[in-house]
Image (cartoon, rainbow, N blue to C red; front, side):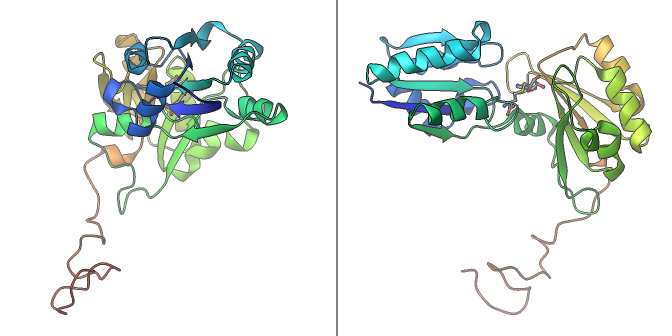
Length: 261
Ligand code: SAH
């Protein structure tokens, strides 16, 4: 039996067992689940109880979502708003949160495993390799949602850092052009990860100069991330963290005899 609350829950990137334990428990307790049907694995709904009301927000607009939440709230019921990956990235939660605040409705947020983490796992990648890149730029190609001028791809490309592009796999020609224009070399390794952690997962690796061709050949236009950067290549330096000559808060340099705390 539920209680009066709205929980925004990150569903994880796809695989049913990649939701957090907390997120799963919230689904088990929920009286109502509103899930982002375009990307959330419907298999996650099997965690809900038998009397749980389920709504697919893919076919609803903001007012409809809020309407359902308000109705549940009036009945003293617990709603889970299930968003793909982690809700903080391209999740459109801010407008919902503000609407709940205005209505005096209590809410909490449960983080999730973002698809960019699922993609790293699929690629066996470390996004932050010493001597290669120590930053990850999470961004998108401009679509119907505009991107501020100072964040246009060619300007972010100047850094040559690891870059993960959401919502852009249907615009690979433009992505390729802007990234090359901005400063990445054509030979920079890149990858397209389709449906990371789902059964249908597909990993396509190549060079930035052939990104568009790779997307076309594999007919990928959505539900994919584009990863670009030399961290997908062969060269890097070993980490300081596990260097036996390097002292950390937990370990002294080799030969000094101190113990790990
Ligand atoms: N909050 C989500 C992102 C939502 S935006 C997260 O943290 O992952 C939707 C975009 O995310 C999609 O267009 C796609 O680019 C990406 N995406 C979501 N799930 C994905 C998956 N399993 N594999 C690859 N890309 C995914």
